[in-house]
Length: 191
Image (cartoon, rainbow, N blue to C red; front, side, top):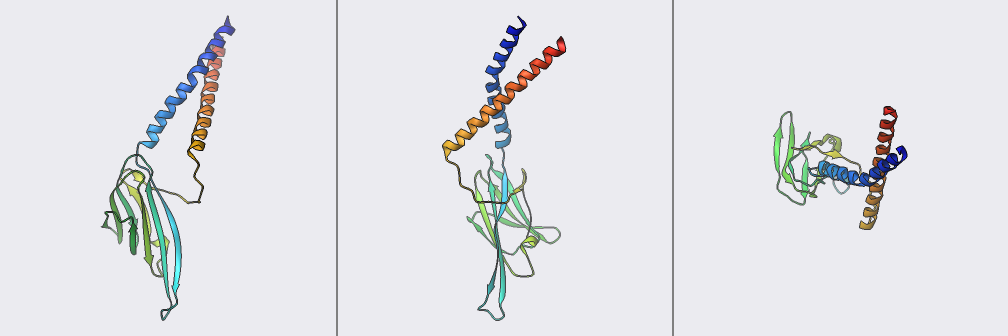
């Protein structure tokens, strides 16, 4: 009789674990995706020597790429600068420059919609280096996450769905085994 109850509980856990996994996945997706998420990375950092000038002139450049990967717009995106050199924004979207205390300036974008990407290219001369230009990147939702980039090949959509299926199956198994452990632990305590 006890073995039948144990088998029934095991069957019930096996049946409900994918549903629990689906509900948890939905809630986690809502929590992590329904917000603005800013990422920033340096596109290139270079120096150029203009040899046709007398004397030779060094010119430094770098670019900063900012992207909102979230599902809602990022409000009041601010890029702080210790020194604000000449710059160009691509694509050319509405922005303003704001003076901040203690000798700094910000570039302010009122909104970055989901999946919008902005590249700021800077041009400056020695002794300024790229570390002395940018200070921070933040919005009303919080600070941008700085990432290092490595070129990768994008997966095909069927590959992404297959990986999601494997993840779902694996997490369902974890929920199943946790349920069995709880039942086993509860039965041993009550004996």
